[in-house]
Every structure is written in structure tokens, then in C-alpha cells.
Length: 473
Image 1 (cartoon, rainbow, N blue to C red):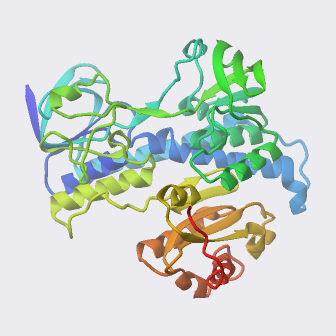
Image 2 (image 1 turned 120 degrees about the horizontal axis):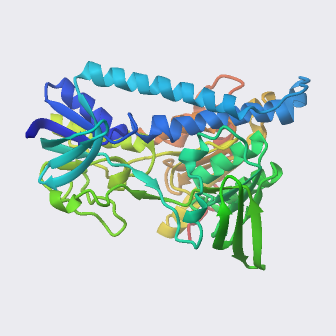
Image 3 (image 1 turned 30 degrees about the vertical axis):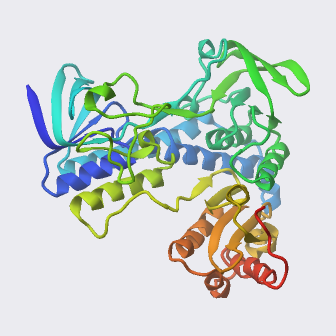
């Protein structure tokens, strides 16, 4: 029997769940199909659990390595990974409960099962508790998400490596964790496990960790990891893997210095993600995907099929929860006629790497300016110049602000320092409001806070007005 809904959502990730809740509240009969993770990856296996683990690791670093810096003597301290896991899982369980309450209160019918499309806006759902249902929707929203990809390296898949999903559920401490990749997931988890007490080696094929960032940022991150005892191998290729992650693994590597072997106990893969669009009948929907499997959408997130939208990671949206939430707002507002037409054009999407210290960026960086040949001015200041860092004994890092050469418009901001994520919001608000940098410079900030660093950072920038303009060329 075919069951008909006004709105059918596949996937309960950030954009999908909010679309379902908002559409149901308008009186539309709404169903959402979720394969496993209620609320999507963010509250279950990604953003929030990882930050929970990272904070536990920061506490461990204070207790095990830095307690004397703060005048505290600690004896017989150790990390209990079971306790770390329980803290994380308690948070996750609470978040799932909140999501279930939201589904009930909104009137959305939550259907746990795996959907495969059979025709236009229609899917067969194999239910998790047995049986199946055939569903169709007048409007269909695809919130399919992405998953970790395992590179095609001989022996790698057979070694049963960890992804971030399994790493966040570990209740034991790896003796020697080998991390493949040097992006956000790799760097956050590498630092966390090093602080818990694991030996950690990062293997990265590129010449820089955090390859999309400017060279000074990559160098600062490299120095941080080296100072914390993480072995970082750059420009290094893995040619073969032997063994089983969790007991003993051996990888053959090739670098500019030659070929060698590296042994460890555990292997973590963090080399990229692919969309969950394979083998679910996308062609039956009339929905096109690109060569990487991401769903083709226009600026309103409409697919190539009528009355079908794709949102979040599977639509090629930057892989941040906050970007997916904005996808939801675009689709919702356009459907409900709220305000002017919204699109994905020229979105100002920030990023935050939750290492310690944090690395944040919004807008353009120096690589972007050089690629676009845009002239600019740049102000750089060490984090230690902000007195707040002295009070918390966290002087590492810097702040960098990019301003147009011919105006006072803020074009980009990068900060690698304590509490950087809190600075990010102020700069992004100024950029979104098209405020000149002088507004931030002339604001009276509370003392001692990180924000008052803007006063001194921009004072340096003002001094450049009568000097040579930095050119992107």
C-alpha cells in the first residue's frame, strides 16, 4: 500500500530534521525516515561527541601535564577511558532524548528504516524492526549525509581501521595510534589521544597539515603538535598495510627521504568523506549527481527533479553543521514565502578547528587573495599581546585580520589562539553587517577579555594606511 505525505524527509541530519519539524508545525502531514542515527551525525558520532572527548583530553592535559603551572599538586592521576566514554555517551543519550521529544511534539512521524527510491518522490523503506512500507511525498527532502572513505591502499580495508565513529567509542587507550590524514578530524583526534597518553603518528601525503590554510597557520599547527610529542610525517605516501588495528599494524611508507616501515597498535582513517547517494535509486527519482556522488542542486537547493530538494553534506554544502542549518533556513523561507528569496550565493560560512588552541577562520585568507589577485592589507598580532592570555597561561598563537586595500571593509579573519571561537562571532557579525573595521577597533571591550585584542590588532592596521599596501600579486 502506498502511503502519501505532504512532506517526506529522508535523513534526520541538521537540515532534514529542522525541515521536518518546521513543515509539520504548518499543518503539513510529514514523515521522516532515518536509518540509524536519530538527529544525524552531529549529536551522535561527530561534532558534539568529538568536542566532548576533546574537552576531556584538555582536562587530562591540565591534570597530567600542567597542574604545577597553576599551583596545584596532583598525585596518582591517570586517564580512565571508560569514564571518558561514559561522559560522552551520557551526553549523546540526552541529546537523542531531546530529539525524540521534538519529533513527538512537532507531530512528525519518525520512521526508522532504510529507504530506496523506486520512482518519482517514492521510496520503499525496509523497517529496522522488520517489514517494509512504501512512502511518497508531494515534496521530498534529501538529507542523506556523508561517510568516511577508506582509501584504496593494499591491506588497508583488511586491517579494519578505525574511523572517527569507532574512535569516539573507544574504552581503552591505544598504545600507538597512527592517523592517516591531517584535516580537521585527524588533527582534533590526534591531539586528544596524545593528551590521553597514546603515542601518536600523523601520516599526511601533502606538504602541510591543514592544507587549505595559509603556510604560517600550517607551521603553527605543526609546531603545536611537535611540542606535544606527536610525530608528524609530511609528504608521505602509504603503499601497503599489514596487520589488524587494535592489536598490531605495520604500514609501508614512502617519503622524500626514502621508503620505510612504521609500526603501531591502532590505525585511524581521516582522509575524506563521500556522500551517501550510492545504490539507493537516485536515478529513479530523476535526481542527478556529480562525478563524486554529490547531488546537483541550484542556488535554492532544488535538485534536477521537480519538488525534490537536497540539503546538507550530500548536496555539496560545506561539511559543517552550521552550514546545513542555513540550508534548512533557505529552503524553509523560500517555501513559506518568508522575506525575500534566499540562496546559497555569497554565504559567509565560518570554520573552527577545535584543537587546543582553536583555529578559526571566516572570509578570505592569503591563499585566496593570491589566487584572486585581490590587493589587501593585513594586520598580525601574537596572542600573547592580549593580556587575557597571560591570566589563563595560554599565550600560544596569533590573530590575523585582512582588510581591503582601498576601503575599511573586513575581508577575512584567522585566529589561532585560546578562545578563538568566541572572537569569530564578533568578526563575522561585523562582516555580515558590512561594518568597517574601525567599528571593532573603537568599541570599548571589557578588560581582560580576548575581544579587547581587536583594539590593538586594528591599531597596527591603521598604521599601514600611509605605508605600502600589501598586494595579492
